[in-house]
Amino acid sequence: MALLLAVMTLLTFFYVVVTNLYNVFYDLGDAYPALETPAFAVGDWLLGIGQEMTWSLAMTTTIFAWLIFLASPTACASARTSASICWCACCPSPGSVPAVCSAA
Image 1 (cartoon, one colour):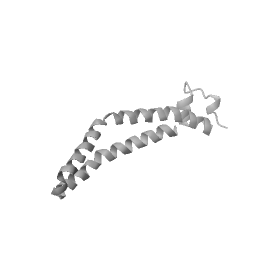
Image 2: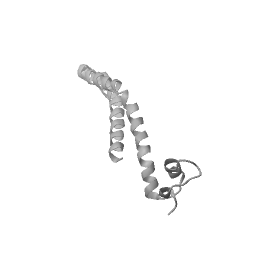
Image 3: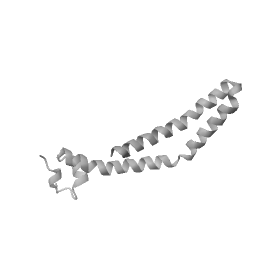
Image 4: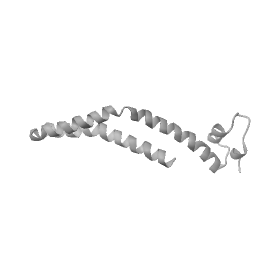
C-alpha cells in the first residue's frame, strides 16, 4: 500500500510541476529578450511532456481504486470494529457480520 501511495503521489506531483513550470520559462523569455530562444525551447519541451502525460490521471485514479480495495480489508482487520467501512468491505450482505468485522 505504501508503494502504491508513493507512486500515486510522485506521479501527481510530477504532472503538476510539469504542467505549471512551463509558464515560468515563457515569462522568463518575455522578460529577457536575450533568453527568449532557450527559455521558449525549455517551455515548449515542458509543455510537450505535460500534454503527453494525459494517461497520468487515469493511472492515478486506478492506483487510488487499488488503494481502496487493499486498505479497506486491512483497516477492518486491524481495527476489528463493526464500522461501516468494515461492513461494506468484509460482509457479503447487510445482515451478516463476519468474525473479522465483529467488535472485539
